Length: 167
Image 1 (cartoon, rainbow, N blue to C red):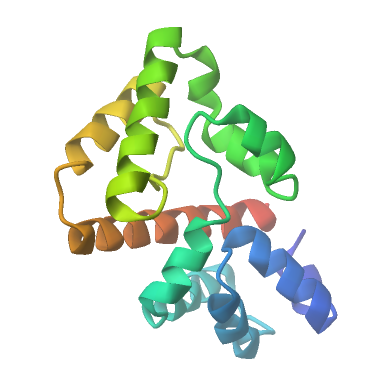
Image 2: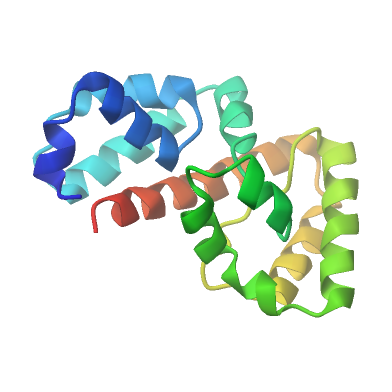
């Protein structure tokens, strides 16, 4: 899709496309006044600004729209609208050893129990072992640190997905 094509979408369809990039209803609503957008750089800057203007509740909503790292079944079922993007983002997990996959599953469970939300990482370009190391490194953090870390990772994901949408 081109930027022009995105700019001329009916509002409901524009919201749907933006929601594929970030699962926060508030963020999507905050982005609507920026359309039509003049260029990609401006759109990415606006997307980031509006993300930072969201609340913790908005960030937590967005996190629920991601599969757990390595959870291929939830990718297929719950996240059909973004499964291709998320699958490509997590592509390295497909080549992971069974031991790494089990450690990711256990780490995800521990993380979610401790923080109350799933482990969010911009997986693009990272191997399963790298993601596992990041998960393990972040587990000792406080909840406040992890909200911030996850929010920053979600921002990276959103910006990448906007670029993919317009490629």
